[in-house]
Image 1 (cartoon, rainbow, N blue to C red):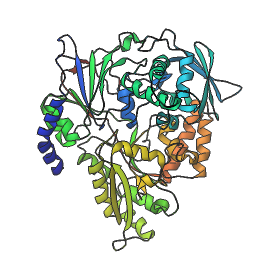
Image 2: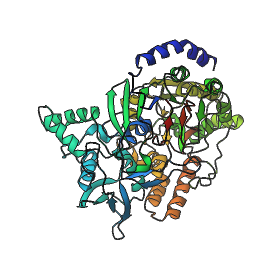
Image 3: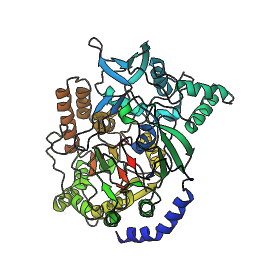
Image 4: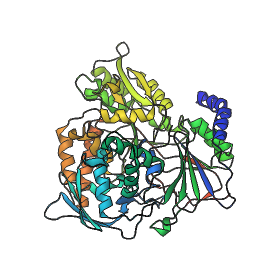
Length: 553
């Protein structure tokens, strides 16, 4: 970590100069302002379906927008679960398990004052699923449709009721819908009518570009000022439908700061009040200066996702198991990450209802790893070359470069020759949906992208089901295991919660026994906050609720 400490000191002045250039204009004394340094290199998209992974959802999704369903983020001790959002209740039809009826919340208005209703739901489904709709936006499809792959259409029953149809029975749908954010159709239509373009498609693209600069959702925060790659300012929505979640802070300013040391320097200098993922080697200094480190184990995995196409070095299960046994996760936690991780022995740990009973126990066992590699034909004089595509920063990526360098050195003891292909985070995230067969993989046979494990689809299905291979979803490596497919179908068609959980536990155990990923860490979502901040709850979730946060001027 010496290089990180040096880098932190040498970049401090530059960081301060950069943040000073972003300094807020003089604000009225009565206004309270919360300034946050994000890990993203750019402001996540603001038009309704964010990019930048789930950091985008955290900052430009759940703030300005709502879904039909949402996550309960109110507890630091209980698991975050799905609760009613813009829908008050829902039910799958008994006679046809592909039909769902959602009752909508009355009295909700968008930020432009227009009403939320069934027409708005149908319009928002069509924006990502109906290519014939004027508002269809291909740029929003990848980050949305891949997260709810069975939804095919929406139909208005009455002003406050909609019917959603899936292509197959899917008990996960209410969870998936937390990712579909509702924007104002009326606001978009006004912008469309004003837009210039050679045809309807060009006008639509222009309307969405304009909408991104002057957004209107139903969320607790409203857009006030937006400067791409520099800052997004949000103000509280006094008319938010849930009065208990009207923000207690007047204004929130989001600043992209992809380098951990720059974020830390900005916090210590008082240029921001809150930073995501502070530099681990600065934790003692941060706490010594009176700032608070908030952390909580998240449903999150930091992995390598393997290629399983013909010719991949990871097709040998002995190699996959050896890699999992070659990593000293406790050493990574206690050394490089200063305690800011939980060792991963699968997507879910013992005690979780989806853990199951795997026979392969992931742990640090160097002799066993070396033995497996020798059985696979490798050794001190014959290394196995592998190439990993990763990023320098990004949503939930923790410290991707130092962590991958740690893995590179550790795996060398097990006869691996690891090469790193480091690219920009958002490019990596886009490549993830293209898959290992796409030229964007650049010859890599594994990809390092963290994933959320909050629900069955995000945690398991999108990686393990063969039909989720690109371009459908995130089975980057083209895993094709009939047992996985069978268990996915069993879980998806189990509308009884206990039966569904049993099938998911079997699926998780099967993926561990197959060493489907190189499981390394669970994030704890560390963030450092000024002592002026009160009321923040760090939930067991990737997301947070900014509404109860207060800050003294």
